Structures are given as structure tokens and as C-alpha cells.
Image 1 (cartoon, helix red, strand yellow):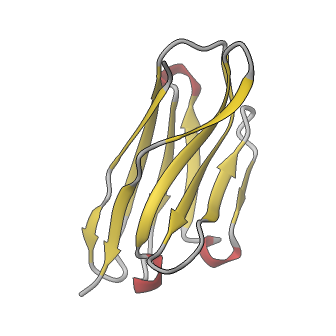
Image 2 (tube, rainbow, N blue to C red):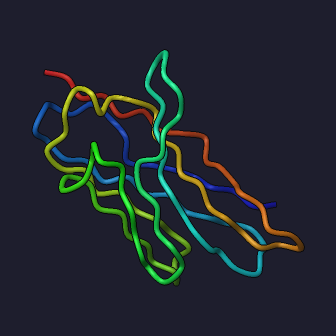
Amino acid sequence: QVQLVESGGGLVQPGGSLRLSCVVSGRFFSINAMAWYRQAPGKQRELVAAITSGSRSNYADSVKGRFTISRDNAKNTVYLQMNSLKPEDTAVYYCSADILITYNGRWWGQGTQVTVSS
């Protein structure tokens, strides 16, 4: 059974920073792309940042220059460094991973709350 477990969310003041982590565990052959999504109350889930197995990354326009996605393939972990946080970044953040078991599938974490407020 594959599991994704996020950590690092919390309450932070505007302008502050947080670092999210997501660890993939279980039995699988490989992890391909990994990504972070977020969903604010009353809004659709949106892609925040994604990274390929070769560490090529892309970002939503709203977070470019403030957020950085990275991964440690040896630890099966993806990170999201969030700087200069704004109230509009408040959301539940989810990690996803495209994983090859006996088939290719997209797996999701349970989500971690990020609240930016003074």
C-alpha cells in the first residue's frame, strides 16, 4: 500500500515562511512527477508547483518567485518552500505523486492546512 504523508503546515503571519514536506512510503517501482496542489474554501483545487523525476519544475503564476519545489529521490520526499506568504495563500495543501506499481497511478496525501493571517 502506497501512502503520502504531508507535514509542515500551520499558522504564519503575512510575509513569513513555511516548508512543507511529503514522504512517499510503501512498495512501488518508481516515482515520476510529484506536485503540490492547494484548495481554498469555496474554490477548486489548483496546481501550485510540479517537479519531474529529473527535477524540472513549473509553478503557478501566483507563486512564482516566492515558492520553490524540490525533491530528494533517495528519501522519496518532495518539499515546498514557501516564502513571502500572503493571506491569499491560505488553503489546504495536498501533495501528489505519479507512481509506478504494477500500473501508473496518481496518489494523493491527506492534506495539510496553511493559514496566513496576522
